[in-house]
Image (cartoon, rainbow, N blue to C red; front, top):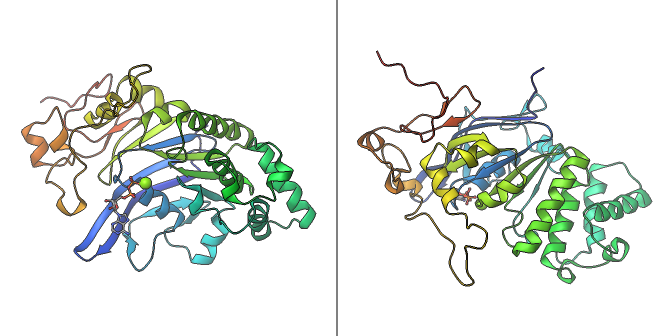
Length: 337
Ligand SMILES: Nc1ncnc2c1ncn2[C@@H]1O[C@H](COP(=O)(O)OP(=O)(O)O)[C@@H](O)[C@H]1O
Ligand SMILES: [Mg+2]
């Protein structure tokens, strides 16, 4: 039996109208998300991760942005790229929920935690007042917030960063969505709290059977929780593979460079800066002819400057966008005639 994806993104291209013309921030990106799995979307800042997730949720300002007509976001037999705002409102929160890097963008400072959970439940469920309160407390317990009863009456500023992120997760999961999109959910937290939140997400995934799209610039985070990874660079999908394969045998030089920049345990000293990849992601206004990673690539050849490689799937379920992939392994080799 082949598994059916719960979400299929096909040829997603998201454009912005700017003072200097139209830019394509997400360029022909396709991927599937399967029930119960965690898919990592990885890439440096500016590669199009957030725009991808906001496109799926249809949260981008309509006067500034548009999806190209071939874009498809297939969910429950509908193409979310085309549905009306009323349908989207029923999908958001109840079926696909999203959490952000900074909880204060989603939590309202002037309402208590309990009130905010109640609002989500009031909108999306038929529960009465007592039922909603019981459910809200149950959710706070589920995300391992101590004294859930008491916390219900507190305001976001009374909570620590880690506790706020837990409340956000409780709000996102209280309607039991099929999909949770987590955009850099742990980036603002210190390492210990980050590990706790990742562990929590891992245990919730098993309990609630939610499919997770985890967006991060940090392959270290991916290693802890993801089953599969899509690597993005300058708006393009450049590599897709299972978690083991990507760490053992990355095929795209960019993926390898990201892996090389993960600090190894004990290697990083206090105050020392994180290793980074030399150079920067090209501006969307000045994309090079050829491979978008050429400027920074250690394996660059003349062909890389002349022609952009296609994203080529291989028999082992992986895909890579590179003329000269590393670790080709048992991928089918081009026939020489
Ligand atoms: N409102 C906007 N107008 C113009 N460009 C935008 C807008 N929002 C995002 N972008 C551009 O889209 C690209 C991808 O951004 P984003 O998805 O936020 O990156 P990431 O989440 O990977 O760090 C960036 O080059 C960014 O400048
Ligand atoms: Mg982002």
